[in-house]
Length: 176
Image (cartoon, rainbow, N blue to C red; front, top):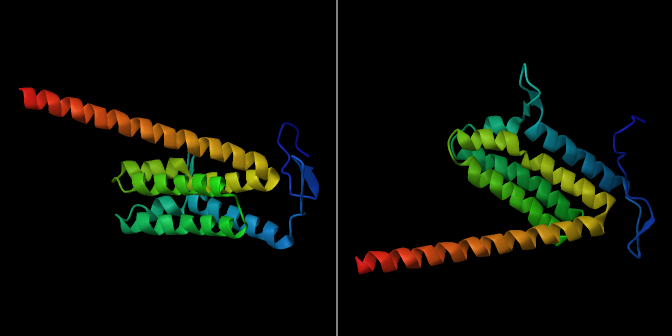
């Protein structure tokens, strides 16, 4: 074991917050390993010479205007579909979908979107969320639920500010 590195936990029969989780099956473990490989391939498989940064096939495919971003979102959606098949909680799935949505929406912007896509690494983020869920499902679900609720509150607050600013601007324009 390498010191100062976290040990990856697999789900064994153990109590978690008053419940017993069944042991992880070989098929579930194989699925998570396959998703880890796909995420690496899409987000981090190509090192940039002379730097510590990596990009993946998703960033290269994303260089094709619109179609490349669509293909990237479809490839990222595969990880979401597999997480759903593994019965990941709704809040975690929503958080994973948000990662893919951010990657897809920002990726549409020429050049900046491609750079953002290479840095955001939604697939690696999603597999990390999946790994966290596999090790501690209740904690992952709870933190994802809090994240989603805070995000929804932030969006609601942003919309309220936009509506108020629009109303004030219209009032000012009509008075002039």
